[in-house]
Length: 221
Image (cartoon, rainbow, N blue to C red):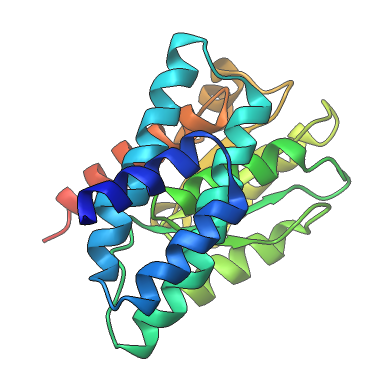
């Protein structure tokens, strides 16, 4: 019976059925199921399947966005119940993300934030047109692992470089992993400014963040 329900949960994510994902999450709460198992055995496999379909070229941006929103909707129901039961959901890492100052574009940034959250990261989304110091202040407040900077204009890309410089001047550069992205951003740009990583799409950003945070935690005493 549980396996059948888990399959329905996975299918709701794959098909981007937000209301169905919410309904199944509520049903799991009402039936007093193990909610961590519901997440790991029900919803997460659906998200993994979406990643496979994207990699094969069978899914595109609209399907990816629908899947991420469906996952977020389910988690919005499950996480408060887990907190009430004093059960912590495993977090892969803390992320502060936003579009840099002077840039109001946020569709790509929103998708990256949604996919990171759907894959178990604690995401603090500052929105668009974010002052550089605000990224640093929030990262310190939340003890973030990552600062993720999006820029959709060649002029605002310079803000990515400047934030890394500010971190260096404040002797905070080693405290955070800095990831950059956006339409005009390239791996060469990331290398030139000393960023820790660049990804060309949301799923690659999730893979990169997962790999980097595991490496970072592995280096801790």
